[in-house]
Length: 495
Image (cartoon, rainbow, N blue to C red; front, top):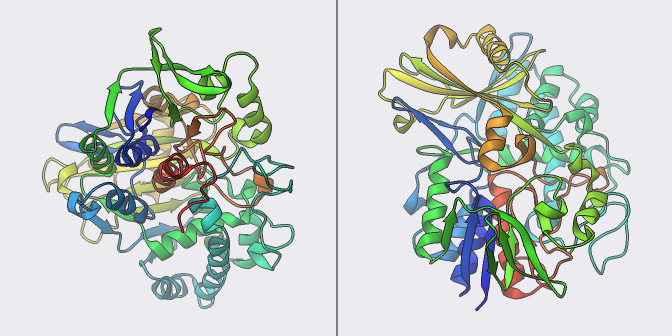
């Protein structure tokens, strides 16, 4: 039995804590904020409720596995999950509208009907190649830990031969060429219809990735959604965070909220505990760092005394992460509307416009509205620059969606505008950045730092560690860290 300190009560930190406690360790989670969940928050006012972080879940199997491995009560015993049907409605700049059902065949038919014969086949052919990417990278990108921080241009994990890309693409046509194109290039080459190009690009944009700078392997994001679906948790994603937190406390995990961590203590080249921001020191046999930001500097990531031997290695290995290339921030507008949610309104609408690609979430959830004569709606766009005029941008987003015919402004009771600064204040992440999932290709620039660090006894979890951002990926990071600690550093993932 070990005393384990977890820094951060986000989804990755809690996923690791629950698994480690079940394995017989004493686990204490230190969280600078006054609550759990990291960026998975809820805003409530006058009977309205809004997700202020992620609003949908892909790959719910990650959390089903967490609940199976940590207790008798299943995830569905605790929550009501609903698969979106349809998965989304897309409004394109030329006025075309297509509603995509939650099946491969249905999507193909819907695209042919809305965009013209042959478009569905081109989309399906591209996603078939994305499936090959998924099958080739699923295990190393989700189910196996990285043994050390992978270099972007020349170095693999410990014990591996140096190579240019830790997860090189297979050498075939399309997505898997010898020199893989960007997502934007493969979309233009193979989809040809600008509406299909925008459809594929929207899956990258939803994760804060720019299609013209992102490896073509990002097409796997569209494949995952179409194959495994998008899922909604009744009460919003905050209910999922609540369920994971309660599973942790049921299993004996101790939480210390309002407790910041200044650094990880180092003794003889091994993590030995924490120094808190109030000056106190806490001993620990092992430390799991599950918060922070993309730079992962010495004071924030390792806290090792003396030269920044850990932080410098990560900066060299991940210049893209340091520059925010594979991360963006999120700008959201929370709308309280008068009037009932219109019949046949999809949960998610994506409006493609020359100005912005806006995601509109309109859950049919009585828990998020005062009564059936009102509706709660969330508009969101990724942003990569500081927002200097939030209200102006909010007006632009409303104009975009109303030009597409959604008619939200005329029903507005009030709005709350949330900028990246709000996310930064809640999570402590510099700039309010939100990490994207890890991707193959790009010479390793879209990978995240390894779960096991060069400092013995210090592990990384959460969206800024392998396998990257998103609810499912953060949960998987906790599983990987727990596997390394429980089964040993030679553990190579689930079988």
